[in-house]
Amino acid sequence: NTEVINLYSFLIARMHPHICKKKHTSLQGERRNMSHSSDGPSCPLSKSFRVDQDVTRSRRDNRGCFVNPWSTWKFPSNLTLLRFCLLDKDNSNIPTCKEVLDRELPVLEPYFIQDPQEVGQTAMGLRVTWLGHASVLVEMDDLVVLTDPVFSQRASPVQFAGPKRFRGPPCSVDQLPRVDAVLISHSHYDHLDVNSVMALNMRFGKKLRWFVPLGLLDWMRSCGCENAVELDWWEKDCVPGRNDVAFFFTPSQHWCGRTLLDKNRVLWGSWTVLGPHNRFFFAGDTGYCTAFQEIGRCFGPFDLAAVPIGAYLPRYALKSQHVDPEEAVRIHIDIQAKHSLGIHWGTFTLACEYYLDPPVKLKEAMQQLGQDEDKFFVLKHGESRLLNPS
Image (cartoon, rainbow, N blue to C red; front, side, top):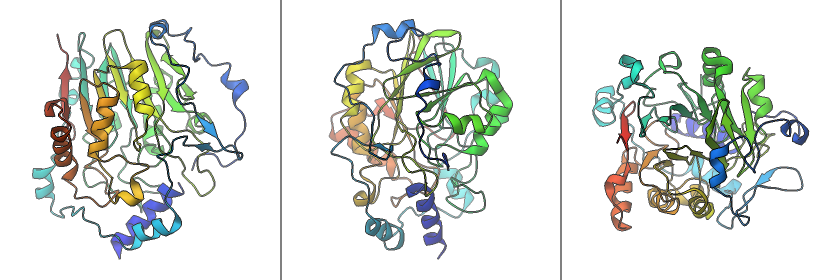
């Protein structure tokens, strides 16, 4: 049936997910010519943030593929994937009626479409706008940062098949305000969309700085993105001309791939952005692991974190790679976030939980773990929130 076909097409893209068509080759010589380093000469601000010597570093196996170094990682077996794909009941229950969806999960016009002059006017504060799934627009320290931009209708290598949005993007690439930097967490189709990348590059060109995981630089250049830098875990770089804001690539527990041939040839991770007035953490896509305690110890507290709360059932298949709401709260605690935004829900049907459950379960988890419910919030698609305005 259609549900099985859609789920299977997603698993093909997700579990055997288009990047490097050639085997891994060393980029060390080329990367040495870039401005990033783990010592921080190009980012004076970050000298006050020291990376502990005992933090978890990225690792590869004997084939040159990246691996998860934590005991909490276990990739689903083929039998598990078949059970997930063919036997598990989909309890997402997405309404077929647009009026119901508009009422339960409205899509708002972002404020910047009518008031573009307000973009970046946050003084010493920070403004966040949710654009759906893991796409977040953050304004902090006079920079505008966009995470995992996906504006296409499908999270798929093609736009005629694969997981389709049940809530559209609240704006187009052409309606975005100025964007100074884009953060890419990993290469899966619901986080790295070629049409969105090319549209952003066509609009902003060399003015837009792309921060991407190790191994993704060649792919970015194939899309025409010249102002891109790839980083390993715990390395950092800056937007040219803005050395007061440091962008660290930090760990997460996940995996990468876009074809049957490139699994884990590209690294995955989270992003830590440290400015003179604000600190922002973007978790990307992850299972729970001890890396978040390391990130909190090195860089916390954070003024804002964007943490996934959806696509978590069934746990036997997804626990290693997707946190559930309770584990999202544990990340919130581990990294010492003052506020967190729940992302990675309400946009694509990627798992089996009821489509409105993630915020409900998040609230319950905050209560159970003794946390202030208002400190870990969700937004409507297109909605913004201003933090620390004074």
